[in-house]
Image 1 (cartoon, one colour):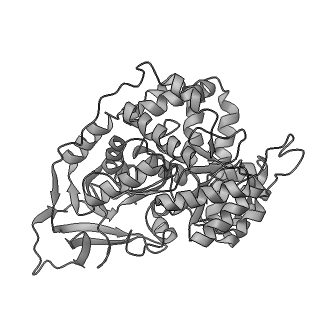
Image 2 (spheres, rainbow, N blue to C red):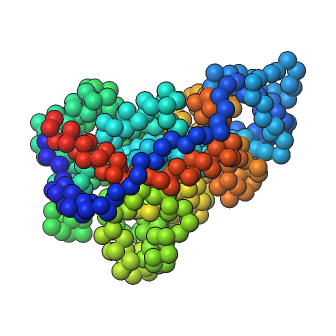
Length: 474
């Protein structure tokens, strides 16, 4: 199986000690494990069209699940008691589009209230990482992952893509991913029509989901202005994607890049009719626009210490390109992507929050909170924006016992000193995070951030190169 022709280039650019980082140990967290009673807390539920806010609630958590919710503490006890007076409790947040390169990055997600992430460029080491998190060996959010990105050769192929051209190659790649333990496939825009149809058929046969960029087929000269895409966007709306990624890609593939409001509204209605959810990932382009507009200051802003230096080195050419871009066209695109996202929301498309964290200067954890803010700029209320990272993700993933606050719900929870529905900025500063039966107070969260700032670039390179070797040999 082939992979990107860029493989040899990365070996050269990352050699010679550029990424000689020290191994970042797991922190000695001041975490607590055991049954939990939260007293006198305000709760916000996100199940309906309007928030349900209850004061002075008592929440009992046993074996990682909520077992009692009421305004009466009589008969309730637990090894860990949290005074929730003056605080607001909501379900933990889910980021449906991230790129994890090293285990140290995980702490930044938890420290910002993100209790589940969906990694969108998986390799076998991600499956091992997910098992270590689930067992409690590794502190981090629950890790879901696709397999390696499936793509065909073309202008958008990248080093970590599993390149397939023919139906036979595509079927073999899907079977290999299934045998490795992956159950979700991520597709990319250059996929040939032949390869895409084979992937679709094999995924159906194996019970695997598909998600990602909508495949366009071969990028012929003149596409999309002088001739249509090899695979039209409309033809894909019957193909049961779990989610379609990137409003930016929808504008490119579905509208041929034109900023046509009428066509955009019609397209939004078609997507709504298909029932396919969308992950807008507005921040992916927005931060690149900021690089063009604000320059180097964006690359060194507060929080970039939690970015992986391995990825920063790989993306140096991307940063250089955007530093030289004129900001005005990028701003026009940025605003239209927000407008298109608003049309999707108005049409009734289920939106799920994803930040593309881990690439393009998107900071793990922080980026999801910034994505929610961009969604409010697209027309969603703060409550609706938080829904995209809670109940919407649970529904898309068919997990009715998540993102809820009643008996039987999995206790992935976040405590804030204010109500994020009333002030979305509040969501940037969680006080306590609970996940997988562990309680992380603010001191423990700060320790996780210290570890996140020590990402091991050498280990990240090893993870990538070993993954590439495995998918090449299959």
